[in-house]
Amino acid sequence: MADQDQAELRLAVARLRQEHEDYDAAINAMIQTGCEALRIQRMKKKKLVLKDKISKLEDQIIPDIIA
Image 1 (tube, helix red, strand yellow):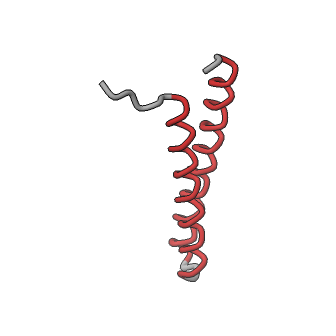
Image 2 (cartoon, rainbow, N blue to C red):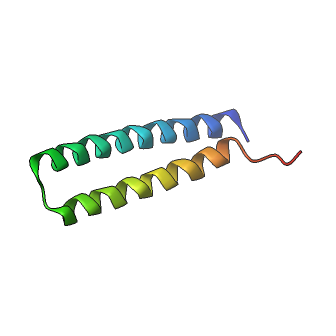
């Protein structure tokens, strides 16, 4: 993989991680304020989708090498 491509993937991962942290903070705030459970559940689902995207991008950066 070219260095340019790898750098772009790392940047995308960093952005997604920040967005994941933002969702985490928003979910915690919603829980503390007593927001309805359905809205919290939807936010958690979006957060999980972000985590899956992060994992896929990280796998592209560092592929599994079977020794």
